[in-house]
Length: 285
DNA sequence: ACTACGTCCTGCTTGC
DNA sequence: TGCAAGCAGGACGTAG
Picture 1 (cartoon, rainbow, N blue to C red):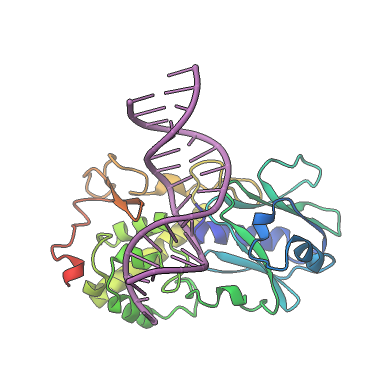
Picture 2: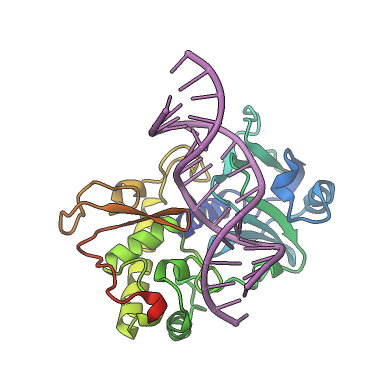
């Protein structure tokens, strides 16, 4: 699933293969892909034709291509890919939008099986698209304020994993890297955010940044063909995951078997020895 | 402002 | 074998 490292990998691919080129035409093949562009598919396509793409940017799991003072904003959802390739190749069943370029070179395709992802044009959004102003900076940005994050996190009355998935508190963390960072920081996912000491927060932030850096270095995580790099190659980080998706396998640190627990109709993976369930119930803390 | 939950979507896996 | 239920889950709208 695309989280910050995967989106950053895609951003780098777009920077290399799309930035600086001029869009010739846009085809929206599924209207749901531009559902957040309220003016509709035709307006979306017409507004982008003939315009030059600037340097790709990213905040958290969102990425955007500046176009003049505007922005083409993208979110990959669960299964979205941005793929660059030979414009003559066959158009597969999950291609939701296609961009051709004035130079006649490789085209750009937004492919998304589960259609949770979307594209939209954000007028005046080159610097920061209005649609994502409510999202907090991600921990790899200079704008991220560790002190502010620590204060807001400790003021919350919820479990720490739930807080990490709240993009208005910290952006870029999803289910996979939340579990991996919590494992690295030796914190249980349901520990009360209000019970964290400042040194716990520091250790957690360091763990998030480290796992992000490792994953970006590996080109992102991929479990299947749903996520691929912008040039079609899969990432290689999945083999480095310590706990996510590995219930019943030994913890890489202590050998205890990794467990999977229900969490928000989803899953939380952890090592029951390295990450002790908090003694005090967080709702009583 | 904060917290929790249901919803959107498709394809693969599991269970009877 | 067939079919239904379960599962994956990011972000948003709504309710409290």
